[in-house]
Amino acid sequence: MQVYSEKQQIIKAITLLKTKKQTIGLVPTMGALHRGHLALVESALQNNDYAVVSIFVNPTQFDNSSDLKKYPRTLEEDVALLSTLSKERILVYAPTVEDVYEGNAVSEAFDFDGLEFEMEGKFRHGHFDGVGTIVKRLFEIVTPHNAYFGEKDFQQLQIIKKLVEKHHIPVKITGCPIYREASGLAMSSRNTRLKPEYLEAAPFIYKTLTTAKKLFGTKSANKVSEWVENQFSKHDLLELEYFIIADAKTLRPVKRKSNKKVYRAFIAAYADDIRLIDNIALN
Ligand code: PAF
Image 1 (cartoon, protein in one colour):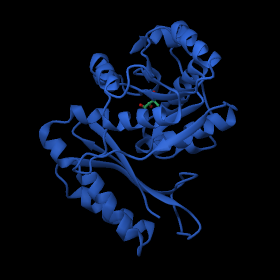
Image 2 (cartoon, helix red, strand yellow):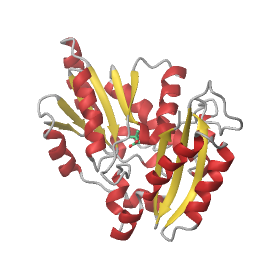
Image 3 (cartoon, rainbow, N blue to C red):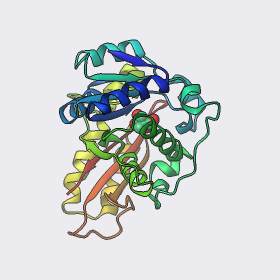
Image 4 (cartoon, helix red, strand yellow):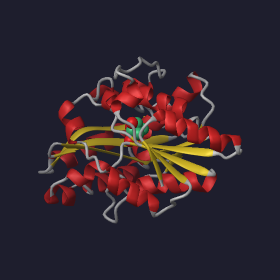
């Protein structure tokens, strides 16, 4: 499998593939790959001639320097995992910060029509400007036909769709379902940092979401939120940061339920110092 650390090299390889009319699907990642990432790469391989997997821990999307420092970096294992899918049809782009940002690792300021101010935007300042900056840059470098993102970061997925729409970037964005452990815990690179007791506790997040979904059938969003907050207040190990039921399109919190709208419930919670997020479709 070809692993490129310099953008000029991968641009050359992609240009050659494109002259042969080959299609490219991009899977942007920050590495520490798990089964959920592999499912995205599988989708890219099914629907394109080649998959490009970028592996880059993007400094501009972290508002907490210790989180950035502790983020797992496992390039060798990542490449080994990817080669179980294909050695010939996957190109890895694992650049340095210098290669991507050319000495200027700062975010662009984006307007995502308000999507950036909801949920994660309230707790991770500048996060979506950082995500927008790196994803836009990856689209410019890789020029993919398609790009694949997980629904675990549902807000990020909506924001990337908005980025593409507003900046007229010719790439089709596909969202892929959340991949879960047998326990229900949403797969995340951060799970590897959970101490055993927290790993055991963390499936409570998904369990709570599934019950919230049932309750939402008969109760108001406020009542469901109260119930969830109460469940977390009784939990010894997990600390709820937010629970929100929102319109899946605008991401605005629901005030009054309507049969015509599609809703989703979102959770962010701390397990020790590890921040976990998850979400579920409600209707
Ligand atoms: O979801 C992620 O892993 C990151 O936010 C992304 C999209 C790779 C951008 O750094």
